Image (tube, rainbow, N blue to C red):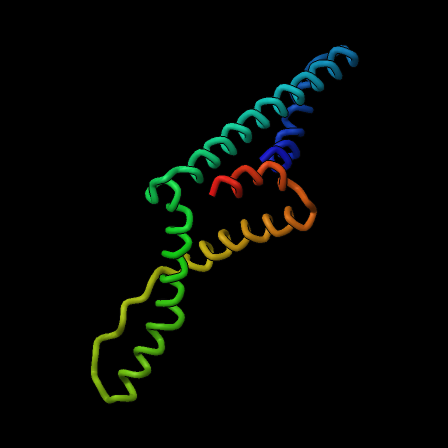
Length: 143
């Protein structure tokens, strides 16, 4: 999260620092603000990683299984929308059966799929670069 937020917040910090007339005091204030922001974001990321780890180690499928469950719901929805419904509609039409049109799902399935695959892609990049491997080893041993 830090690499995403720091560039976005840097211009705000620069504008606030520009309000200080003394150049040395301005540089010191900017450095302190950036250090405090970095520390806050790192603490937030660490807390989220801890929550994720605790969630993944939970014995209950309702705690540890919600992420895979969301993935399977996405897979089933995509399978229905793009395979089952069109092929079933075609098969019923070939048989000469007159049935009402099958319901369709919202078109936002692509956004959900791209979001989930995008996260998977980022993890693949992390694996290729060897980033965060050590922090995930305890999770792998715990299962």
